[in-house]
Image (tube, rainbow, N blue to C red; front, side, top):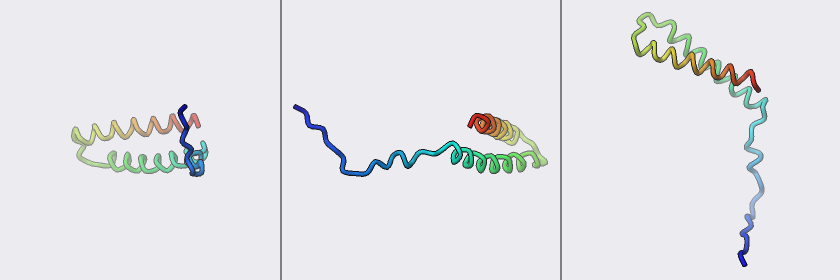
Length: 72
């Protein structure tokens, strides 16, 4: 007969979950940072291949965050 081992600790895992409001607030904060980064990249006078690639990635990241934010 197998005996189950009980953990003598409080169940705290549910306290680690974000509410939709909290997740939205964190996402809003991250979008502010990402928009600032996008502005920095767009303002660079010399737009080489590295800057163009970075611009594309940051734009895609921002678009994904905005899309996700709309679904919360």
